[in-house]
Length: 148
Figure 1 (cartoon, rainbow, N blue to C red):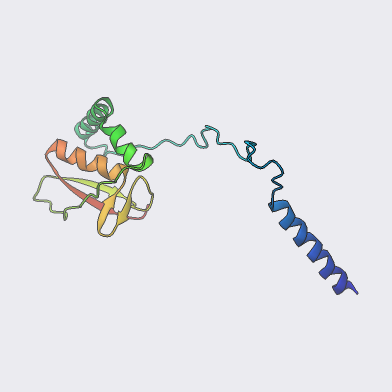
Figure 2: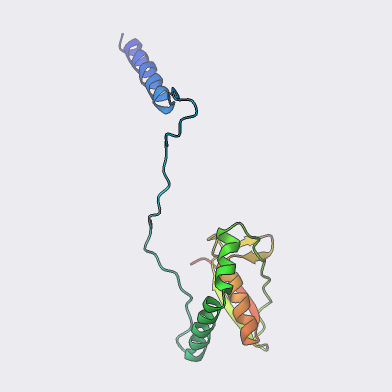
């Protein structure tokens, strides 16, 4: 008897769940909203580039470069690629060679849209900024993908 009662109760609950998921559309063509998109920040997280403390001149160059790309619109162009339906630019990494003048960027390429992989190429906001920074500094870009 308990099994029969439990089965009947399960059927009633399942039917109630299904009925609750549906909607009655008695006003065909009505403009009644069922959901509303609101502009609310869901996080207060901030993101940044980290620079080796023993290289204060590099920190100054990075800060100057970021200010420059903010002012000239380059940063907004990069953002538009990832948030505005644009086409991301893949970034290739050179091999580490201490005899060359290289900008080495350590990252975990698993955080789209900031850094991620497409085949063998790196893609993402941070990767495009890093590539432009290396170009600005006249250095070859080396990306080291690692777990943090």
